[in-house]
Length: 231
Image (tube, rainbow, N blue to C red; front, side):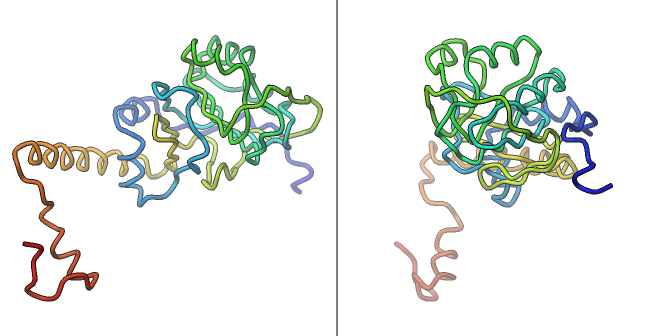
């Protein structure tokens, strides 16, 4: 089948399982990003409208032409409860791709949240409602609904590759994407890293103000000579 013959809306998605989503939601996006090799994070321009907004779930991917949200409406129709709509809006801020009406529809349908590399509007209403919406900006101008897009195909969103069904986690720091095949390993590594960081914070409160690795790292970088120490 040629690319021109493929359906533009793919309804069949292999999703990361709900149990893994629940586990991932317990971690900061930063923890997951670190143990994923510092890969899979969206550009920092994509932020929650409110710092209290958090989201985790399997990705329903959308590609749109700048300023048109027809494909997002299609994604809202085919998404299942718990999914996260992830939109490649090309970083365009000339028109909002959704606002209060579409986010209300998404919330009523049980969709976990919406992430858009593009603009949204009705910010006051969205923030007051608290439903998780991440975007790269705001614009009062509304979109058109006439240009074909694609739903549930691999996309690149704000510098990160996202495939349908991948695990997406977002919080005040931003958004990280974990490939579905790597989720089990990443969750194991995240639990270990969180335990290590918790111990380190406790040690700092106990008076251990210098990480044990620092002198060695400074020597390796040539900032200290062999045998030299900071103190």
